[in-house]
Length: 138
Image 1 (cartoon, rainbow, N blue to C red):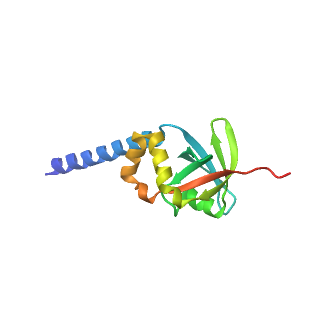
Image 2 (cartoon, rainbow, N blue to C red):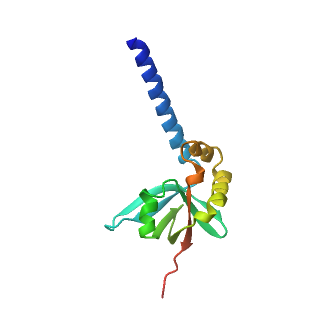
Image 3 (cartoon, helix red, strand yellow):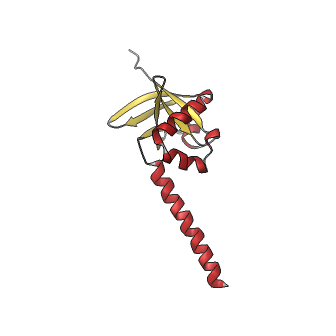
């Protein structure tokens, strides 16, 4: 009985580790940018995210609109995106009406990885964010 229980626990643990590894590989596949957001205390946080281009803008997609980077940019929409060697300032604009379009663009760009992540995090609940470049004032 104890051996059977340990085998079951070992199998479940092994599957959980395998799923976590696949999720990590999926989330890091393709182009990944660094989003820098600022919290209420002024501390900067970096988050690695997928990005797509659509309608002349860069777009991000939040899986959890009530926490993390999305919550920070909701209160402080001025962000910086590091893409390759460039760091560019943007104003982040949550755009829920673009959900289907941005989901489609993410699927086209990230393929199997987007499908895999979608198994755990519903595409219907994703929240698209449009990045508008901030032009320096003179």
